[in-house]
Image (cartoon, rainbow, N blue to C red):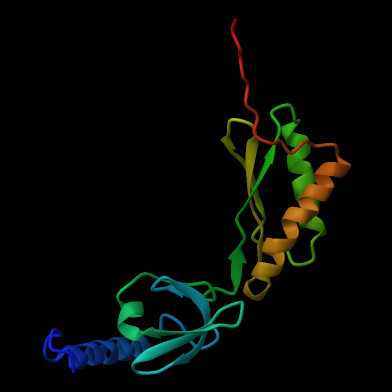
Amino acid sequence: MRQDWPSGWRCKGTLSNLAAGVMLLLFRPFKVGDFIDGAGVFGKVDTITLFTTDLVTFDNQQIIVPNSELWGTKIVNHSHFEERGVDLVFGVSYSTDLKKAEKAIRKVLTDHELVLDAPEPFIAVDKLNDSSVDFLVRPFCKGEHYFDLRYSLPQLVKEEFDRQKIEIPFPHRKVIMEK
């Protein structure tokens, strides 16, 4: 045993993990199968023991987190509610007819089979940036379809903008040169 470690360090860590494990099992902020974000990691809960919680990441890595680290931080349970909102931002040029752009976005959402009718999708101008007018778009879906929707909508909106001749701007910089 290393001489510079305080005596009892192992016991203290074990006891705090045990206490946190009891709290996690008692209060159940998440269950096996839920997607959580906590202690700086994100993944699907695979196992909950008295001492650790095992997560599996999207790229199939196992992360073993001491329960005291999870219990001592903010835990976001992405699976808690059956329905989830998907926040997306789409920028259009300042010359774009905003009603036309909103209509194009709404069409994509209406046509997408995973977007729920209720609650109704939220679409609004969110920011006036240097080179774009940004729409905040929040459709709702069943929790298990969150990532399907999150990663299919940008392409579908881009394709609809192209069909409607709606410009998606790139950052502009104006340079003035004087003699």
